Image (cartoon, rainbow, N blue to C red; front, side, top):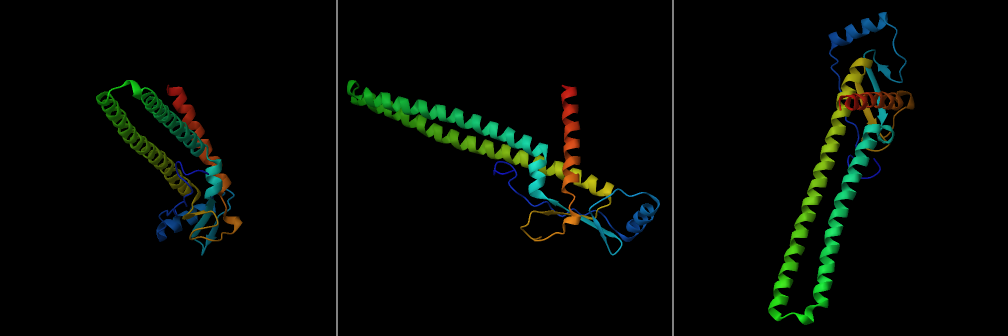
Length: 206
């Protein structure tokens, strides 16, 4: 996501799949008897299969990421507009109080001023509540995105025989990756296929 509303840009954690010696030997034997799916991964020392995903491209292409971003922006805009309308109403009441101050007694002015100050304090509290609500919503969406990616990559790595899948965007701990190990497109296509099916299932159940 290009803005810092939900996930920001985070590096995918290295995904480890169990790779003890017996499991590797069995997997290797099965691979010899089956036609393998074309892949951009590589095998090192005969038993370690690795690949990487460009995290920037992943977020740009993952439909769930886009939907969560759009959903959060709508929540933020709605909350901010509601708050602005309350601020505008308070500002108008301040202006009206100033305009009519000459017609009010000192006691009435003090009472009115106290009420306006109380409303201002309430608005400050509401602003903090709004910001807290948005932070919780952001975190919930972030957690959902992480969980969906984690579950998918667990299953994808197991199905494709990967032992490690790196997150890569040219920065961080991994500064270079050979393009032959790039499985970003395959992962994005698979993620969007799974997400599309889940949306259809939700629509059908409603």
